[in-house]
Amino acid sequence: MRYISTRGQAPALSFEEVVLTGMASDGGLYVPETIPQLSADDLAEMAGLSYAEIAFRVMRPFVNGEIDDETFRRLVTEAYATFSHDAVVPLNQLDANHFLLELFHGPTLAFKDVALQLLGRLLDHFLKKRGERAVIMGATSGDTGSAAIEGCRHCDNLDIFILHPYQRVSEVQRRQMTSVLADNVFNVAIEGNFDDAQAMVKASFADQSFLNGTRLVAVNSINWARIMAQIVYYVASAVALGAPHRKVSFCVPSANFGNVFAGYMAYRMGLPVERFVIATNANDILHRTLAANDFSKQELKATLAPSMDIVVSSNFERLLFEAYDRDGAAVAALLERFQAEPTALADAPLARLRERFASHSVDDATILEVIREAHHRTQEILDPHTATGYRAAERERGEASVPMITLATAHPAKFAEAVVKAGFPGVPLPPHMDDLLEREERYTVLPAELSAVQQFVVENRR
Ligand SMILES: *Cc1c(COP(=O)(O)O)cnc(C)c1O
Image 1 (spheres, helix red, strand yellow):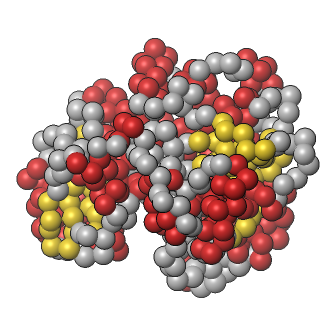
Image 2: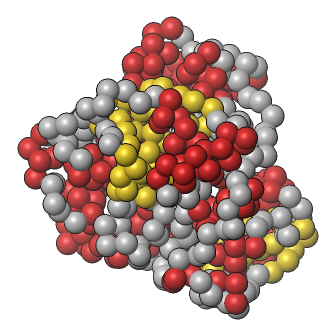
Image 3: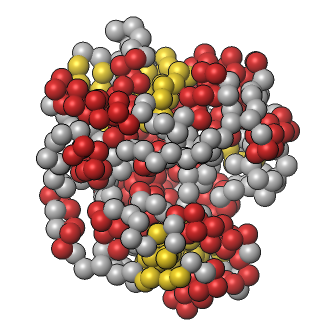
């Protein structure tokens, strides 16, 4: 198995290379050259297995023998042992055929843990094998930073530097990052906004000479291994509800499209999926594209579901590659037009997408209404991201015989602002985190200057 770029120009890579690489040199994203298949028997045999064992079986073909089975099984088992629920990602039944897939039982209470707990271990494994060290740099406005830190804190060969805008992230989100006191974790508070932080990370990737040859690694959602790890919970939840004998539908609160693309991969591997429902907040590029063929950027809106506040959905490119029959030149041309001006998809690829995907955009007022309504009907308090999914799923309920699985992407305690606005007193943090607000913190405040940040990285990496 090799990995190829969605723009057709970059060299094909092995699994190991693709984990260490991130974006392709032609600006595209890596995808597997062929999609491994799960037969009905393979799926039937997964019934009743542990999450870690299903994860091992689903991901093994993508790893392509580049990690021996025993080691890969150990990495997977360790990654999912960090989750506080024995089922790792439990299904919670809301009514006769609507289920919540709770993806928030990891160390930082959001679904990004599922991928980043594994990615940190994969990176560390390959770096040790090569006798190399690497530096991770990332900018965060909240969620991804803490999940990346938790994924890397035990990795001997990695140093991680996460930049957040000083005094502009919520206290819970800041403390989830800054209370990790491991020797290889460096939190930097930038005297500027998120865009300043992101610009410095981008500039560091564009010119890595300040690191004198040490590899700089990105752990954002364009890394193939993150998609790979997310395929697993689609398979595990569908099997729990009767796959391969019964179809399911999924509803996915979406932003950069990494999560729902993983679901699409599960479908292409052979999982019987009736339909994917994409839920967006007011930042609705995915919904506008699917519903109105309006593939254009709009200004960023700050919403009650901040982890879904995006202008461009980076992983949508991976789905376009499939919709355009893996024609890298066509994808490259489309995305070049998109960067310059509002554009549209060609008819045939759009029709292909509409066969399997529906979409809805959910505004802030509706998020609050849904949190109240869902609590009234089910006693559950939803986080604002999951609330967008709940509403989209309710609108797209198909046949009663096909269960709808809505992905619960964060724990409500993490987004107390929306929960309080909806009229609830708030939600307590789970027991293993209830001392978060008393824990010691460590971070360094730096001016929004590239040279200051790079000097800090060079002086502190081990
Ligand atoms: C990142 C995130 C999303 C969006 O996921 P994508 O893979 O970017 O589509 C949704 N909800 C929460 C809570 C998130 O952290």
